[in-house]
Image (cartoon, rainbow, N blue to C red):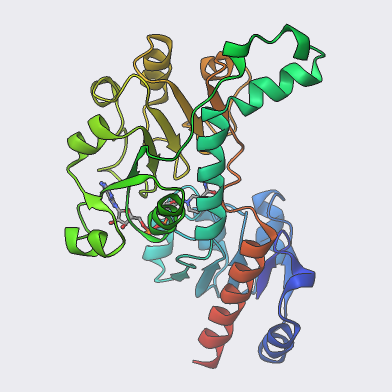
Length: 311
Ligand code: NAD
């Protein structure tokens, strides 16, 4: 069994590691190593516990004994595992739905407050010795209380965001074609169509997977239907927002700000025009990156491998 060494190995449940060791040999591999090295190190691997590695078609085809890829993350998509190659070889892929929800939801709230209170540009001004140059109007922000918070995608993360912003006294709106309005109501969320949600929300946070139907879900036309005062937060996957259209929309004052943990271009290049805007925050895909979530997810992935090996 190959375990991605970016898993916080010391924090793995040692009893589970001993159990796994009694069933199979454990090999730790560097997820950033060249493909060839990963292939030669894991040549006999039956299973891979994967956190940061890109499990390419080459890796999948050349590890002839591979039967299981246990992802520590919350989802499976093409950017991490070559799903087509895995399907061709009938490789089982497991993942941990919900394991990152708290981490991503907390980051979402932080990004909204950071945009509303201009935390990043103001803190940078202080560091640059410009506190005394700030005018009162530069330092004024908004409160979340009483605002309409629109949640796109009412899954594990969307639900957790709903719970947090309800406690902050926001009015919570939701759009998810696969979740009934009854379920949303049980969580205190009003179910709306996408068009209604976009036009009524002060804050919109995105928690949908990247699929053919969500690619560029937020495009130029839809950005125009949002409030001029609205802020938009994408903590799901790059590509759900058309980032070029977002830049134009921000420059034209069609919306007030945006925060992207998952820009369309990852890693974002330094000349990406979005970086030139004061009302944009881009974080380096850190939504799920907490010690707590990593430990929870890694332990669950090891458990999946044990369950598989025990049949
Ligand atoms: P989830 O599967 O529990 O929820 C996704 C929800 O989106 C589901 O309820 C689904 O019905 C809904 N949905 C699907 N298509 C939709 C559409 N066209 N319009 C509206 N809703 C739609 O997933 P989750 O655990 O809540 O995670 C959501 C996404 O967050 C994941 O797909 C993943 O890409 C992303 N994520 C990002 C980070 C990060 O580091 N920023 C970490 C974890 C997860």
